[in-house]
Image (tube, rainbow, N blue to C red; front, side, top):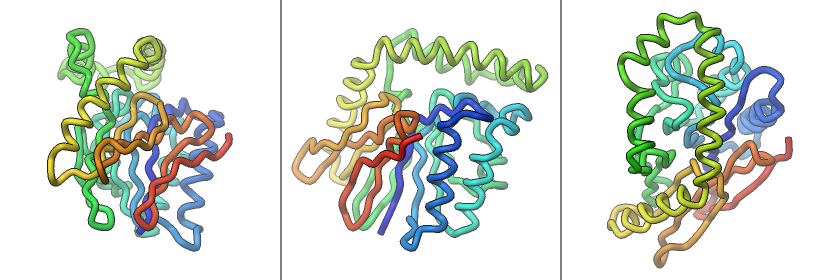
Length: 240
């Protein structure tokens, strides 16, 4: 069995070389002589997606088209929402054919149970917990629907800048709280591998005997991602 795991590309839109690199990789999965059975997207693939937004749709159309092509090729797509892309909605589930999970998912690859999460929800600090609740709250969702799509896009871009700075400042702490949770989760008998994004730190690490912690890193960093094949995990990069 073969699977590809991608996280944190943070594509900004048209002309973004990261989006071009991601689309090349996604298209190559369909033409590969040995294509993967599963594509796992661990969130923050898009810099901004909160419900369907015409401006976001236009800016991300190359990636959306590539994902639809992958689905048409019979490759299963699993999407874990991140802190930049959430409320994926019916467009992803019905039009593209993606399995969307807002918090976590447990999947099986070759008899191995993987716990999948973006990782931001594991931050229980009061500041971040409030922020995460606020951007998903009903008033903000209504405001996003009322405002012109271009206005929502501009506001989200400004907020994303602040969010990136906040995460970079606390990068070490982010990795620590994710790995701490991973250690506890991997104590469970039915979880063999813990897979998360969010920290942008590419890692494949043995936590306990035959139990692993994996982070594919940020795809924005020269196309960093993880491939799984014949029971082995590997960090790979595809330069922009």
